[in-house]
Image (tube, rainbow, N blue to C red; front, side, top):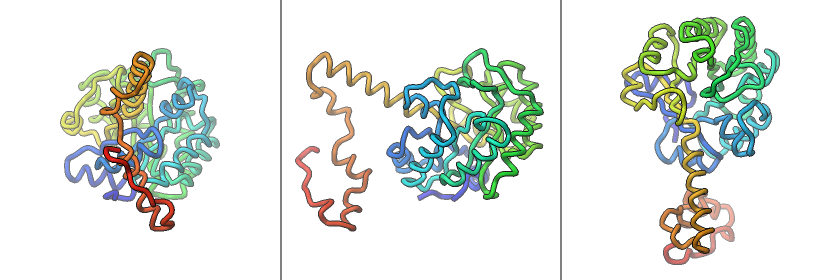
Length: 297
């Protein structure tokens, strides 16, 4: 069971114990359940992962309703508070306002909006273009005003570090906080010094994006705690692990003509059924769980 109901509670609880709130990115509802079983206290829905699952690049091609549908599926199977990537809010301020309410209705605990123009791109790629600061301020204010649940966390992401520099990113973050953002996600900071400078300048909860193969360092929990960050995000880690295993498995199957060598690396049938709760379903209908697993399954 989750130790807290909302992301705000989680951030405060972690801060009181001088520790970091860590958020792995769920690939799907099944992985969300595994995240909870592993003892994490919150999780994340990555826009990049949802796009990749649909075999699309992260260029703003997914919609708010697609993300809300996935969020609803994940909220059904876990009681962990979840933060989602809401891209640019999927349009103008009125679209951002509707996006907030869609995500509230889906059972999420918060979202982040970013200050790129559409078509957006991955935050760790070059060539990003930003909306004007005043335009993003209007979007954040509209999103804040649209909230019906005061506990729903509104986070502003700024991608300004690359196109405009660190000081501009800090200035934008402060403006977004003034407009109603509860927390800030500074994307693609270059090194520990920049993480430290951002923390010194912005007095709200901060998220550190620990995505792999990006522009910034992969800092460990102790380092991020010492830098004063509140949330560590691992948005695509599980997806990359899973897809790497899929590719390895396909190569083995193609080369050997059997999956026999892959069995030690597979989740067993018994573990799968444990995660899915087959026996619990049997409490509703004994015909659902009326079998015996074969040895070693």
